[in-house]
Amino acid sequence: MQINVQQHEPETNRNRQCACFNLRATTRAVTQAFDAVLAPSGLTISQYTLLSVLAMQGPATINEIAAWLRMDATTLTRGLKPLIKEKLLVSTPGDDQRTRRVAITKAGHRTLEQARLLWQTLQAKIVEGMGQERFETFLKDLRLVASLAHE
Image 1: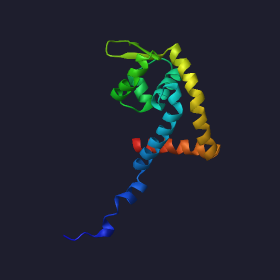
Image 2: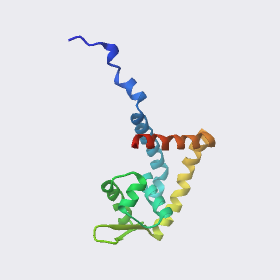
Image 3: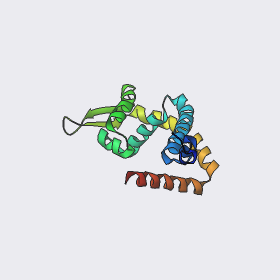
Image 4: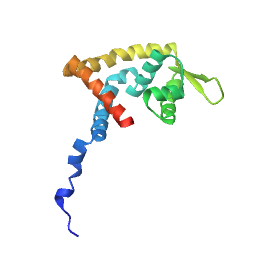
């Protein structure tokens, strides 16, 4: 069997052009950086995001939160458990027995405010490094990619 080398592009070259590969690699790098910055608060960037969303949106069902964050409910539930255990969030029965409503507590608001100061340091560095206009275009491009992938 003879293999035509030109027909079989090396995987590394293909990965460099793959939207998903590049987004995931970038996401891992940014997540690690934010996790390191937030470490003194005791939160990860995923936990910070959950607290931020609930602080902005108010109490919500797990399915509502999952939809906002484009996550599956099972993964979200696993992410909520440590925050509920630490009493940063509270989970109460929803309108029927199948749903739960999650809300941020006073302790959650205090932790979020402390963490926000840490978060702002890296966020400002990224925005400053890219420039405000480029950063805003970057966010629009990310939303476009998500929309195109979702169609």
